[in-house]
Amino acid sequence: DGGITQSPKYLFRKEGQNVTLSCEQNLNHDAMYWYRQDPGQGLRLIYYSQIVNDFQKGDIAEGYSVSREKKESFPLTVTSAQKNPTAFYLCASSGALSGANVLTFGAGSRLTVL
Amino acid sequence: AQKVTQAQTEISVVEKEDVTLDCVYETRDTTYYLFWYKQPPSGELVFLIRRNSFDEQNEISGRYSWNFQKSTSSFNFTITASQVVDSAVYFCALSEAPSNTGNQFYFGTGTSLTVIP
Image (cartoon, rainbow over all chains, first blue to last red; front, side, top):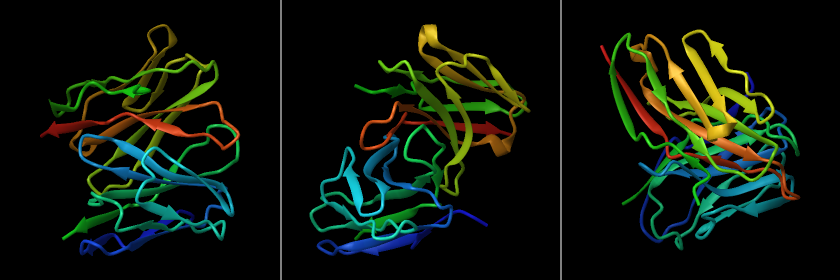
């Protein structure tokens, strides 16, 4: 079945540590996105990528980094510079470079900083 | 400014009641798309519907219906005869015409619906 796989589902981190969240899709989608979800704040865009080796900052990119070396993969690193990283992280993809295609979401990764 | 507003933070209804979730959007584009997604307790967002700005026809899919009104910039979602399985957070979203860096999606803050048996 085609879809988006996010791992790990739950992750605990000590303050000062970097962590990387994995996002892999087998939908052959060009565009991939990372969102952060906090209670009562909806989804906020961290980074997005329309093609391999290119990505754009979203509304809350500070303290995060991404790479897009392969079409299928868009990992997100939460760095120690992110002051409040505890949140639910959602990866998504869509099918074309233009037009408003439907976003397909992964199951999410919940990060907790201890 | 918030591009998508979902003023209802939480709604509770008794099973079999009808419920309408409100969505108001803001855009200067003439071409745009509106979406509704459902987020059950498992966390994964599930796509429900997409409408483009040129199609104001209301749509019905089973117990779900959507009312798109450009005059009031609203895209409301009604669940008829609600069921416990409808309990979830529902998000409305807007996508405008693509820029040279692609198109972004703007999400509302979500409405948490609880259907009481």
